[in-house]
Image (cartoon, rainbow over all chains, first blue to last red; front, top):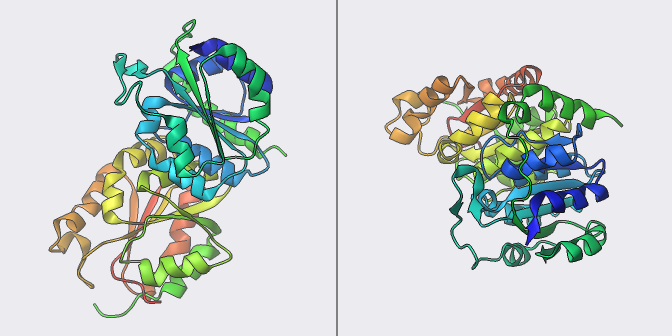
Length: 188
Length: 169
């Protein structure tokens, strides 16, 4: 298993200026690992990260869009895998931060924990490529190449919590952060 | 009230408002008059979604990129998407534009007077959420479309345009 903050630090080295949509516990870690105007946390309703990401990918096909989804979150919007595969954005990279629990809501297990395969579901939905990583060394070795593939690509990261980041909900979802994102995206 | 609701005029009005993306789950109300023609229209990109709330997220992402979009769905899908509308459209001030078929609403009858419970509750729910809404019942209502979409984007607020009858192809 990969410690979440350590995995995100490796990922951040490869995507210094990409659009990143992140949710819940991963979002709190991500904003510490890569504070950036192009971080997008305004998902609003649980499960919709992949859909926001699709909108961003369609609206800016010239930019790579990274979605750091949760496993419980994606289970709420599995149909989006089919929608995304059908829309086929080449710039769309969909990470599932799979810890097997609803971590932000009391650590209850997700349905199907240790049985379902997000990579398998995405592959059958029609994603261009899928990957699973449970070893940080292999992840570090291969992620650069994976990010060079043609999307949509799903990358399932088998995670455990690492060092916990501050949980500043108001700061993460502040209107100022949304405005900053939009103006940064409008820059050429 | 008599009259018809011409689909070509609706599509022209939507395009005149700068909309280039349409996200849809098929609805028999708008199927022939709107969705089939939109699917063939080279000036519009149709994104077929599996569930209506996906489209609310997609719309927000497109808005952040400066792109205008519209949802084309049935009122049952609107009812299923209340939480996404609450959060993404209202609380996060996104100009989510929805064109909504009122399945089985009687032509010429106000939605709140419909014999269908699901249709009657749409406007009161939107009022409770503070979401602007307009009824498109005849051709005379079509000019509402670009005005409503333009206002939604200038004010960063959602708007619902309800189809009071089946648009004609």
